[in-house]
Image 1 (cartoon, rainbow, N blue to C red):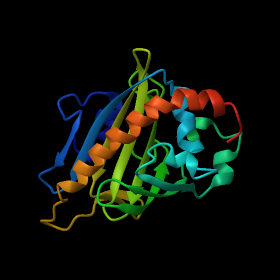
Image 2: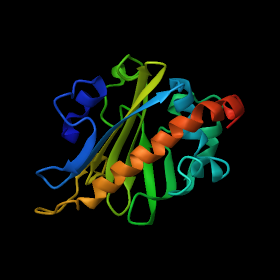
Image 3: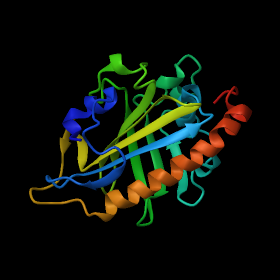
Length: 220
């Protein structure tokens, strides 16, 4: 689905487009789409997970994917840990500096998390049956990308739905394609990210309920 039409994704009105898979679009940008069923996981757990793993010990990030995750740190730990900030807003305006391996080897990345409105989403959709909550960011690194993870109740847990639009960046406050004319994201980039997404979120689904039981009520 074109990045410019991302509100269709948020509303769950994008069924004519790829739902699970990866590829390279005609304009050279690439995409990754995935869905992860997480039994026993709640929206509250997921809202907690994203700020929790960005502060404190590096082990918080490593247990997410022990083979591929090395380091994660939020640049505004005071804001993330402030109990007056609602849990689902603790990523807004916060940058996560991370080292992870999505295929070609460990790479340093900067994920600039945004509020739904600042990402170009309709905030009225958040909190509904099609999008109970979400995180969204624009990544800076070797291959910049826009990213959204949204989730909503499904069976006895949640359905966690991921989208990546590769080849986009935030330039002077505006999202835009940054590939040169005729350039094309290599196939290995979305392929590696797709495999990594499956791996890390399948593992998170298996550990999050017990992790929440142990740590979820403690201060970040």
